[in-house]
Image (cartoon, rainbow, N blue to C red; front, side, top):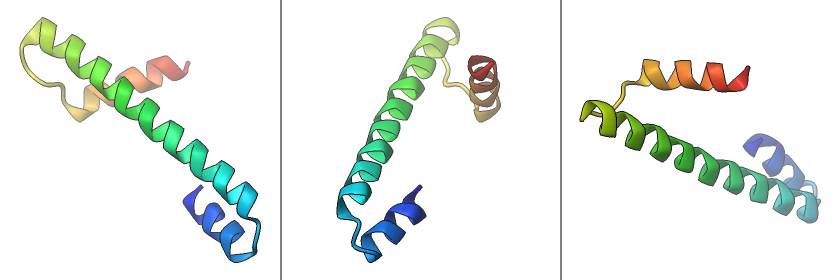
Length: 64
């Protein structure tokens, strides 16, 4: 997505590039929020932070 945004900027399609940057920003914020929810729930149950494998499994289940 970032490469496509750079392509649009270099070709003068600023409105489309700005819209793409907005989507990148919104996705980043959503990812941080989801990470926080996962970490809080794991920490409340186990009193430790989760590992990466657990997060991948959660996202695979959420996708289906």
